[in-house]
Image 1 (cartoon, rainbow, N blue to C red):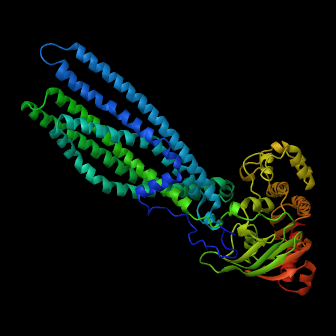
Image 2 (cartoon, one colour; image 1 turned 90 degrees about the vertical axis):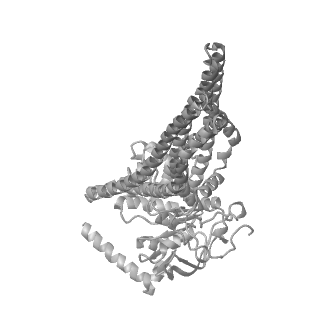
Length: 612
């Protein structure tokens, strides 16, 4: 189909399974790319810059008024009160206009930056879900979260405050320099000679700042990862009494971030102090040379005094510009990390409107010479060739590492095969739009993940907008209405973070009910009954019986009782499909399945004897 990858074409083997740092991109390249990714940052930029120009004029008004007042209003023996009054009123008017322009500029820049960076945050968050499974598992969760949250926050802070101050500071410095040149080119030369060493050193300092703030942003991501893990796994930390070891690890990450921050701030302090030193030298030079020129009759007293004001007007913006420049390096480092995230290829691409939706009929399954290997590793699946008729209940069994879970992930397109095709309903899954695939094919993982909300909200992930009557009816159809009736607040019961207010078995019941509400045509399950009590296991069994009726199902079976009840069993060993057939036939053949089943029977008997 046009616009899609050719059917059966091999997918990339995800050579870059870790999100890049993006540190190889230059500052201007990063800024251009960042603005391309956030086009709303440019909204009304012309008007905002015009307001910025107006807002810088007010700063130069005071020195000019001082000069004119001294040279005209106070010249001679009589004070020209009318001239002084006119000058003061005019300066007040200009300052008022300047303040209004500065307010309008700030509001416009704030709105534009929030709009642009909100788009960037949304796109980055969506892209995290589009990343390859390998990338998601190899990248630490805290590091991914920091790119979408704190890194974009850093860019936002710079755009809303640093960007404004930088524009205004540059404008004020430019205006002050122009007024200086009008008054005296000699004193202007003195001022800029004092600032020249600082300007020349900035390039080298900026390079060091870029590297320093790159290390800061990485350390922030690492710190968030280290802090988040023991918070989520607090029960494990307590159960194994590893609080001290965990705290040592957290302290180390915090200390590493502290050292990176101090290293960067030392450079900030150096540039800020250097700007102050240059300003002090410039003020002293203006006084000395100005008095000398005044004595020679080349400058008036008002001009010399005005020049002193202008130097102050120049020093402040230069110091602010150096401060903002350092913050810009932090923002650029953050922007690089976000851009690197967005540039990480999503190897599971959605064909969208160009794709072919699944047919409106019961779904069959076909694996055609399918092979899969993780980057740099051996084949996990090899030449899997199988067809499963629609409406069949299939169990997949095998030793740990045999490839059965990979088989399930390929079937639900959490990953794409390196070789061959996976077809559902006669269509290669790479050609099926995500909305059609996720609506018709649902996977229930081994651990039912629940969100920190109510039971009602978690069930509605299966069918958004379902009313309470529909939700309760689904629970009753699965035979778990009695369990539901025992909940303290019914559908309003809060399940806690990751569903921790419920037991593992109860979380799995909710996951099955959620899948039933989705009403898929193909259901893929990673069975999870090995760690639940017999009563909950019985409820899960009844729920599964109700859920699997009249639909195609593939269950990664951890217990042979599931395989016994299946229409057909697929047996994997070392990445290859070695046996298939009904339970009774496979047991009679005495092959790999028979050995697995016999081992399970012995273990089950021993478990019952120990329990007794």
